[in-house]
Image (cartoon, rainbow, N blue to C red; front, side):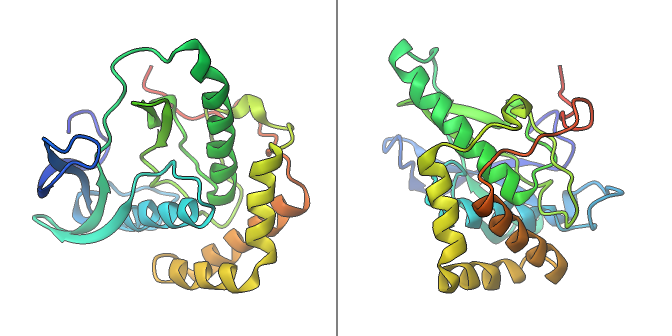
Length: 222
């Protein structure tokens, strides 16, 4: 795919597309060897962070990050994410309230995974008015580093249902322990511990982090 900072490929799989059964399933393949070194993220770990973010989204039962797995592809190990099709028309007026709620769910997810790069272009509206959050590689640093296009939510309370999901994860130790175990196969122990702390912190005070007006914004392409 053109214009990416790292190597990104669209691949076609020998299976039907779940949203378009007449078409072949596609995936977004991001190989480890195609990652450009960054000064603030450990080298060749971005593909692991893509999968880790999906695991957190799934643990909260949000459904905004497309299914993402580890695979050994044509260019070596990498992440493989289900290709999603963007809606071809603007959302209808009756969909706006739902979309606003979904954006708040994504913002809560980003606070938990410490997303340092939530651009507007990383939020896709698919058919049926559902938001998909893609490109989740710059996540899980062990110190505060969130940057988001949803910065205006900072200081607002999480919606009741979203806060309940976070509290449930924090309070169900078996479920949180199982998630941390899975994350430990992808991230450093320091990063996993920091994630668990953020879960507890957000559960205790379900408020979106208030970010610096300059440093809290992502570097958009436009």
